[in-house]
Length: 277
Image (cartoon, rainbow, N blue to C red; front, side, top):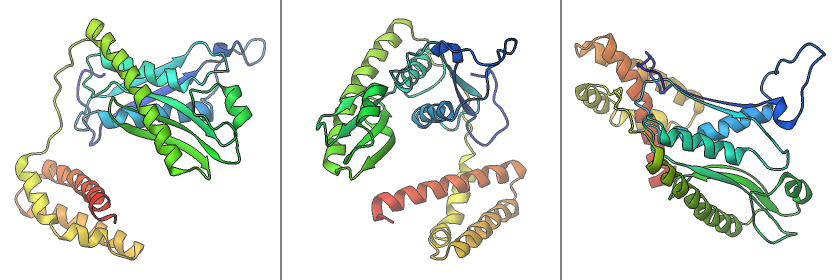
């Protein structure tokens, strides 16, 4: 974690996942060139999988740069490294001084109609032999001690009941892995650093909420897509103008622009959960 805040309106987190060729006993290139190439598509996706699991558990008002670097040093090509890579990133974050609401863990699932049994962390050979199937699913699920917060999944006529049953079992396994990490944190964990959180002035928050009341929902839920985008853009610009005419400065205008996005996000979530809209 960086030692000072950066001038950004978002939390600057970077997750870098690298698989070294020597991890699988391979060295590519000519006799003299021993350079690693760019990350493979699989490596990029593995990095995103870790990112999507850990990112929601940070306070997004944090403005310190945080970098997670996962390097695969040895690989047997039979076991998927995503499971251990996520576990490692979580454990490293949990014992560090970086403020974070983990630990987390994740695992791979495979269920097919041929086998009728859920495989937890199946080997690559098992996946290759059993997938694609006539019916079933494979997934990577991850999350905290009490809830799943990230799902990657593909299915063929997957039954909702089977998926729900698999996720319930996965949650139990994830809980064991989180408890194991908590023991490590008790033994060698550092105290979390007290860092400044980027919080707009309460008066600016109140001004933005009052201005957007009623207007944001009307613009956001316009039926025509082009009409919606036009209205949202106009409303954003109108908000900036309102902030300036209220006697506030450039800094508050910038904060209001960020608050506009937060209010939009909150509205969309609320409408989905409460009205299925």
